[in-house]
Image 1 (tube, rainbow, N blue to C red):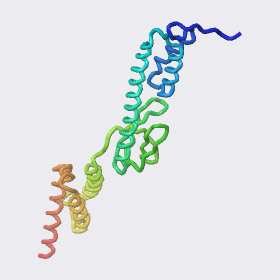
Image 2 (image 1 turned 45 degrees about the horizontal axis):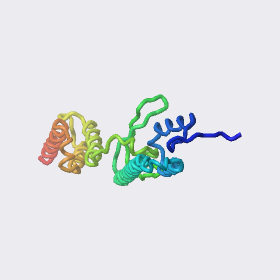
Image 3 (image 1 turned 180 degrees about the vertical axis):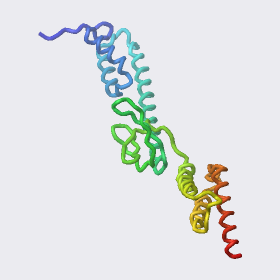
Image 4 (image 1 turned 180 degrees about the horizontal axis):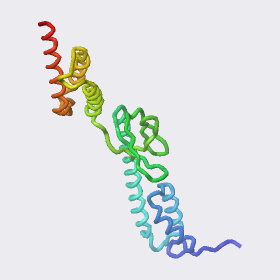
Length: 214
């Protein structure tokens, strides 16, 4: 025997309907426009002919739904545009492992991938959602750090200034070349102590060369 479902004032009355209504309220953000239209058509089939304006509320909800869908589309396009702008740039992304610990990965964005309405960044061979973007590293700073590391290693390998010999001239020259390769912003990252070591070493080498020439 088929189930008989009463209709009162254009609304289907049933416990299942109430549960469905509650579920709909909880998942409004995930219901698409087509599903909402189907629900609206079903309700209009049972509307009260004496109250033809009773469905105005549904029309208003549909308008809100359209606005939400538009905002979601704008958000998706914005993320895609952001991802495209990040190609070739140095970024820091964060991820959470199975133990719940947060890890940070730094590297260049090789390409972006669109999958399941999500935008992914390819960093160091891994894929990360654009939402996981933590920081965009300044390119000048990133390049300066590489040069500074090489400069520090070169100067650290030198003996004390009073122990320098002409055999250290090549290393001192290389250190100066590294410093000169920096732009003005990059040179600003070099500490005064490190720059003094380089200057003192150059002066010592100049003295040694002068002594040899006699």
